[in-house]
Image 1 (cartoon, helix red, strand yellow):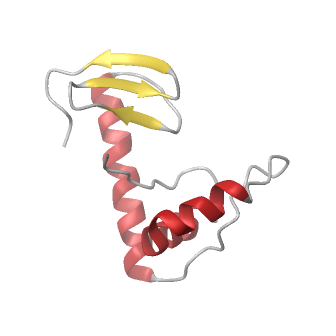
Image 2 (cartoon, helix red, strand yellow):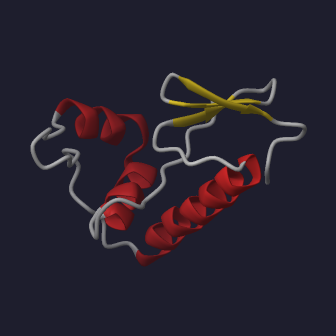
Length: 101
């Protein structure tokens, strides 16, 4: 599985996505286990690493372009399998002829 953090919901999202890029599975686990439902915010502190923030923003742009190619509105998580079937959460999106790049 190739996991790609995106940042689109809040002002802190780019920094949080950057922190997930830096910390990998450990940061993701912390983010999920300390998720605050009331504020809809994960438990990882935002990173200020400009390079990783730029990477998170680029991931977000690619994700948004992929959704546009599918002609759907979707949230996270979005999953595209090797067979080209797209999912947002547990909802099927559309069959892809070719995975968007």
